[in-house]
Amino acid sequence: MSDAATPSEHTLHALYRDHHGWLESWLRRRMGNAWDAADLSQDTFVRVISSSQQIADLREPRAYLLTVGKRLLSNFYARQSLEQAYLEALAQLPEACAPSPEQRWALLQTLQALDELLDGLPTVVRKAFLLSQLEGLGYREIAERLQVSERTVKRYMAQAYEHCLLVDW
Image (cartoon, rainbow, N blue to C red; front, side, top):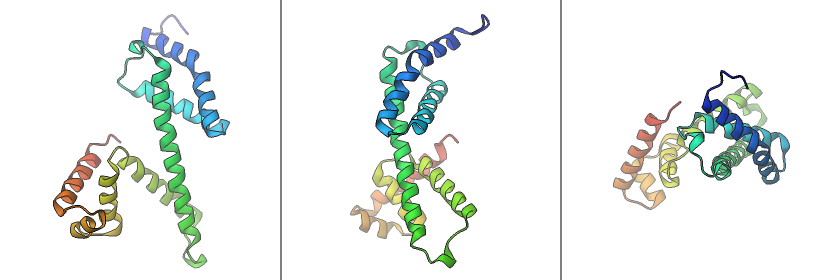
């Protein structure tokens, strides 16, 4: 580290040096895969760097890193589950209708982007939004499926639209 480094760069370097190995080991034990654990460990530090949290103010850096790491791990498994469901749906298609590898990749990227876009919404709001957008259901049909009032569905949809507009891409 050069003398020209800022105090925050020194703090970040110290955080990484002191806790990266521990975090990666923790992730490796949970995932059983060193490659994915290394990726998620790096992603955790990228999230920490890009967050508004001041690294110097962290009283319990491992607890903070663990919280961020657990969220990323949860997102990782959700993406993996989404990908598996997509691949299973593809396997049900007749071979003549199956998309090309390029189309599969593009569809999977779109599904992951949609999943990330809707991340953070309550499950029922997310479900209402997907029923509307993917299945083309009207508010009355969504209300029946979710066993809520139409007014509640309208509120859910407004919440979902607002969330989509406010997500920082």
